[in-house]
Length: 369
Ligand code: IPM
Ligand code: MG
Image 1 (spheres, rainbow, N blue to C red):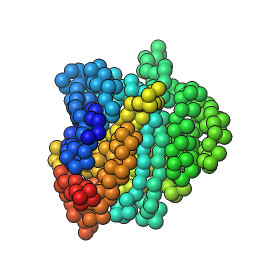
Image 2: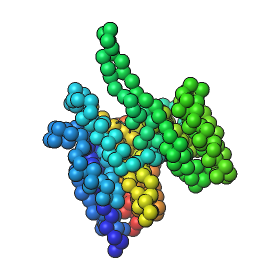
Image 3: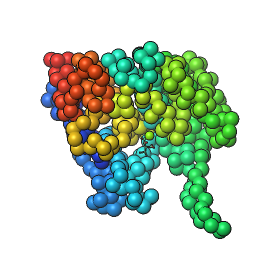
Image 4: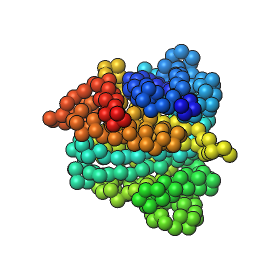
């Protein structure tokens, strides 16, 4: 029996708990069938935590996250907390856990499953076979730069400001993640910036160029973010790995998700730097939000959450075979025509969140029999 893997689950708000419930199904299955035991603990984050403790994230939860081998997160936020103070809004909890765990590398793959090529808002030929990986810098840039704030102007009115700042070590470490992942994939890296306007991203471009000679097998290109947004909907298959700043990555990953049919299909991994023993903090979460309009109705698509679990198996536990098993099971369920509402199209079978989860586990059973 392999050593216990300590996983902290933070289901969060809205559809978070529902989609997390489907991951528990896979965990139970793995516990009984694959001789891997997960030691699961659960805690709260986001709006639910504000309601109970007047903070979106407790210090104890940060400590638990640091001592876990991996964290699985659902989603945070919702209209109920629209009017709480800005520094304790649900999103602040998410930003804090990313920052406190040093999760600077956010991997957002956008893969089009063949069965879903028609669910995309883009034409089948544009998206079919698409497999790109967005590497988003996650603990710097304008999300965290100082100074920031809103001030009253002496003559009336206000001034709101944020700072886009990057340092050489910050750019270098995320660019290296991009180059290394490109080496394992299609050997193409596109760095996205706004170097024609913003000094900080001109410097980003220069730093990426500086380390490029360390990766002679990777073909590096640069693209301005406005053009990149256009290219992602015009011809997304030109990309292999994309590396970009925190905010550009936030925007471009939502954009890329539409190629795959639904935001409900996109998993993500947020990774820290390995320590001397090779151990690193990691958090896995779907790219989608809390979808308050459908929360609690059994309509949510659990696949991004289940695919985030697969990323956890791959990146935190080196369980490539099991990760592949989960991904293949998801693909088989889609091939069989099962669809939640977000990816529904005519002739397919509309299923609930739990039916989708059960179907994935049934496929796992077939494959590991
Ligand atoms: C994301 C989300 C978050 C972000 C929000 C909820 C703070 O949009 O993970 O993409 O902007 O990073
Ligand atoms: Mg986002």
